[in-house]
Image (cartoon, rainbow, N blue to C red):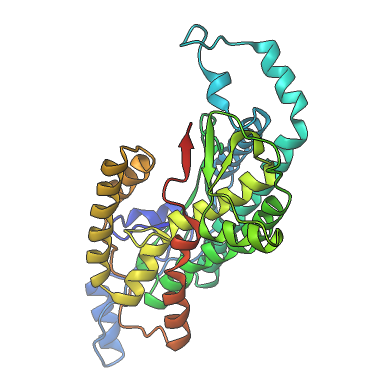
Length: 347
């Protein structure tokens, strides 16, 4: 996910504080223009690409690597081990924790490589696009979450959206989801094709398969109907990583605010995208209340905090062209393919 921030002029300076070109004042511009015999309006400041800061993104990347590794090594049930001594019926067992991690070392490494590969490819899709268009941006900041079954809340880059026009924002917004799916789809294929459902499932939760995963299952298991749910005991690291990649892509392509889907719908429909976002948010909240679920509560809070409306680009009049229009319209089905209604069920 990339977050343009047009209302904070200090962002471009922070991203490239040694390389931002200081714009001329109105008086200086007028004097210079008069010397040439004509009067020109001052152009907006153009920030040159500075060297991105490495330390903080690397620290957060390292923490997220550890987080996703330990979650997978703990059988995707981190809360069972992280709960403090005496909390509920669970007692902290350091020896058991160590034994579980060592036993599931290969599972932890496999999931870590696959899930972080998908996440980084998604974010670097955005990042490379910003570098191509010379839009000041940070490196991806990964967000660890060692109490989550997937070990991370994803990642984010910050970019100076004032420097990008309509077409550039469109390309930056779609570059991440497309790049992430390039890796998520083959990993998901491996996960569903090696899934063993011959034994009855058991465990504290089950994962609902999105439409795309069901199609892959039926293609890889001819004559077998795809299950609606995969139970905890049937999970494999590649299945969870591929499923995580689809979910992250589907959520980011929701047409709201400054999510990737919000960029796309704003570039396609302009300010009408704001009404799409409002209606969708009402429907999502109503669905959560109806289902008595807290599944999307954190994402709802995050989107509301950022704002449902997409800020204007540097130039909204730039034409997308027919090819981008077709790609943009087709991309709107990504959430329907990559997201299931409940995502995770607690049994």
